[in-house]
Length: 541
Image (cartoon, rainbow, N blue to C red):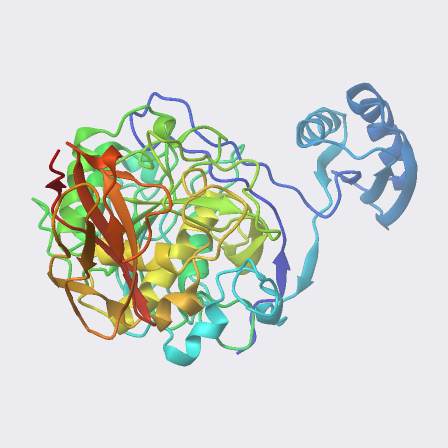
């Protein structure tokens, strides 16, 4: 299937939103850039005798005053427009100032930064570094996992701005349900914020959030494409290309309210919500790519998360884009969530990504920089479907949700805690501590190869005379399935004894009067490694 006539590339670091108390400041401020920050397209409200000269006159003094930039070249477009190239690269703030001031010049209808467009029927899939194993060793390696399944039967709840029609998602340019999208719900209770005039309803269409200087982000459509864009040899492809997305709309023109967010989490997870119809399609995993700078997790939000997890639904949340500790970002600082930091194509922590600390460690990382996905080309209200590049932990989180969809399709009974163990155990290691960035970059290939978990049937034990000078020996206990290999670490009062890593251990004078135990680590190919500690025994004096 061919896509739409044009696609536009832009970059957004996160999303400007205020999901908790509505009066609080946003936690992310996105920036949008076009092909170059040194080119201005000037459009006049009527034909000019010399549009090039008129454009130079409108731009030159403003550019020099705002950024110290001079006009390098002028190219004609029509008798009402011209393209002005500057000698200096402008920052986003300077671009905004130049645009505002040039548009105040008499006769100027618009002064816009040049945007970059591509052929719409391009197939980006081979070059998606975040998806395709061949494109980067620091992607999620989803393409290598598809031989074992593509997510069929799994449903991902995308708690976001809603969704717009897109051939790579809904298999349509006009319908918001169809293809890989199932019916969701609009939980925005404020009609003004919702933009649809009626507040919460059964239609989760993204009406435009007007988030970035009055420009809509279509954030939910971009996130949904990362999760489950259709693999159709055109446009992009998602991590789980046959999984379903259920749009749960909470982000509107004034961010998201705690109550709306809590209701969406519960409803999506199949938990009853008073006053709302039951969800005919309870999700297998929730993706929440939003947040706010709060040093606490609101009680009702935590309650909703706990209810979802208790119902077997993992809750994936973006770490946030303020380069601060997770302890100061909600819902990343809530309990029972899978917190996702963002990494670059080089496998490093993205500069903007929030990070874990000993008080609130990150769970896992995922690609968050230069992520191409589905978008809407409308400036404020919905227009044609297209594609765009965005940056942010908002983009990292849906990679993890997509991998979980692949796992859930294979292992539907695995609990949220087992899913978390699985993705952490199989993560691609990076040069960042597990506390700061998480266990590593989520790895779809390795995660979908997992056969299961080792179950302890009986505890390991210590056999022998517990007295200094005597040698004691550890038993591994019984595990299912069997055929395990084991390693040992002897402990004195719960702390590791240096070089005491064999199955047997000779008790020393230092052990007298102290408690001795042994920690057993068992392994089996294709299974998550497990550990167990024997009962402690006091060494006789």
